[in-house]
Image 1: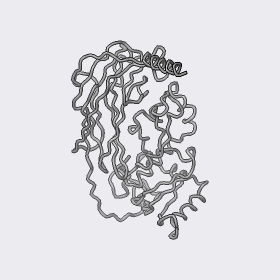
Image 2: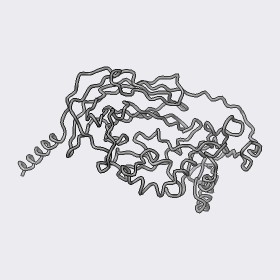
Image 3: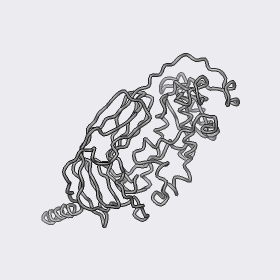
Length: 386
């Protein structure tokens, strides 16, 4: 019995070895000769530098049927560019109020991967346009999110670049990465708020300066429950903790607010740049992503999600929503004491702040679990934006 178990285990190792194999690499070359993008420019401030180093073990090749896959230790797979590409995602915490101006590879080395390869398209049943250039076309992508307490920089590194037409690939062996960021200096002065009826374009609304620490967002049909929760929060004899001043706003009211209309504050986009593998806005091909088309699209109110994001940025007086005495577009709300947001209702009634596309947990293409609903971006709204 023991011999049979040893034989099965040995056969398993042998078969696994057949399914993946090492690649042959050409000599190392400096990053400047690769012809691949090495810098991502962003819209933030500069003045400070943070550096990090990355290196990758040599890739191996996994084979499934007629397709090859580049396997790089420490990387997940990304289907954003039509093929399964290895990607390493890195998050950096920066000071409160920081924004990024650029992320670039200052130095590094790359190699040619010898041989020809056929990578699996994102959806093998759908035709993919054959590109004659390397994909993704850049070794690095980046974005950032500002929260009330910190800034999170999200960096995606693509160590393998693949040319679908020539069926060849190159490999990033190592890189020194430079993150350029800065912190805006905000000088605030005391303001006395007046009615918005005196401001051009806002004759039907008054400016709201709300001292509440907690905000409940809910449909009108749950108003009784929301008011009951508000009463619990504000009960001075509450045994669960201190009194928390709370306000309630309905999704119907937020949907009515004219963010994005002519001469009004802007309608905030869904935070695509903060989603390394894409989101509801980017992964729209109905042939490649049928779950988005058939399951999410009919029920996800993305416009309402954008209006909730706009409303919360307005509450924080983010750029473009500062209030009646600021230049440019004005906002209608101020809630500088806001610490907590309560979502009262299901995802069909109060939409998530975005559906993030991620293959990390599932590994499959357009598996329903790849679409991750999140309310995180509601909490990420701050004085400095999203």
